[in-house]
Image (tube, rainbow, N blue to C red; front, side):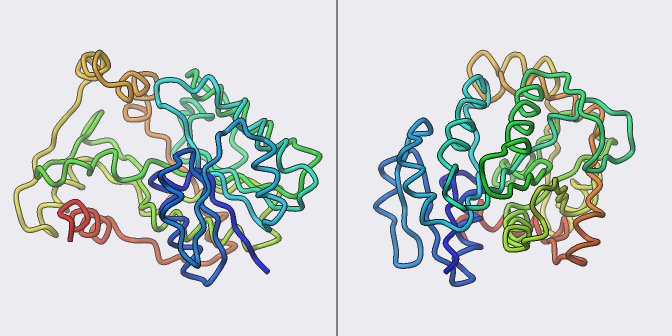
Length: 298
């Protein structure tokens, strides 16, 4: 019987993963460090509260699982404990037989100057976050004492620019004419599900990129058309990010990776499409409508 554990289940992607996996009639254990989440347990989704360093507790849980999907993150301004968290997880996986899916971002590549990067592109991270991600990726892919692992690399979620749609504006952090890549969390969750249940997908890295890259001007024009109202473009400069960092820890953490908006890093996801066909990813228009509806509480 398939039993999937989702780590980081209270996060944006974690919630989408719990919804996607449980929709297939699969038993899901949703793990959060917050005790309050346990009260949400239902017949199809059981919530557990575990601290990241609780290797014994995770091992107990993983021993009943067929798959472990790791959608966790840490405070955006401080990832110093990230490798230790993954080390505890790899230790807990030993002897369980569970397959492990590690969900990554693009930071490990650093500026590449390439039009698009495939899974085997060189990694030359230029930020401390990128170096940490590269360290973690190497830990995961070189783990010899656990069952097969797979790494899934995703671009930004739309929310980084659409979270202010309820105020009729989009945020943008670089040149409005340069493209940026986004994926809807529901699309990311569906792709992770496809990879998770495919035994051939392990011992590999996968890029999943969603809709084609889009510039700020094009996204604004599209939002105005499909939402049928004025949408402003709020351009956030490097100086504004520094000022915001004085009071906002996410802004502090964002300063070192802002280069991705001036030197676009575009994921080549042709490998995913070759193996799984043309997935039904949301278009930008569909994603904007969905995100706007959710921001309005509809």
